[in-house]
Image (cartoon, rainbow, N blue to C red; front, side, top):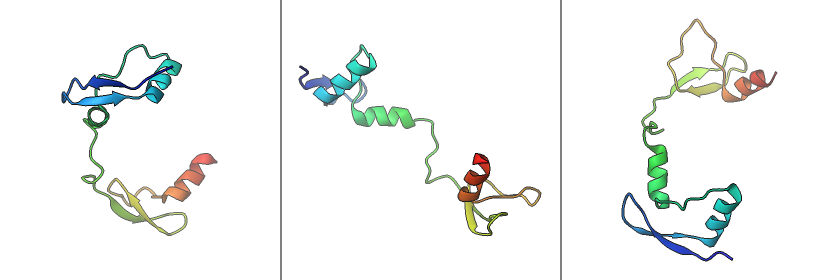
Length: 94
């Protein structure tokens, strides 16, 4: 029913393929417009404005519950406990 289509990316001008499977997915979701950007440009646009995880600074702390080392994205302070991801998830679920 669907056949691969060649489209031109509106950002980079490169040709990309809108596959039959992608067309079927778009139809199932009710999308009426074809994609206007190639996969690389869509990904770049999606990630624009997000900080890169490599540039994010992580700190090391000791979990207040189990005593394991925890990597956290904020500077720990002595007035509040810090939990590792496992203990934090367990506390959140309870």
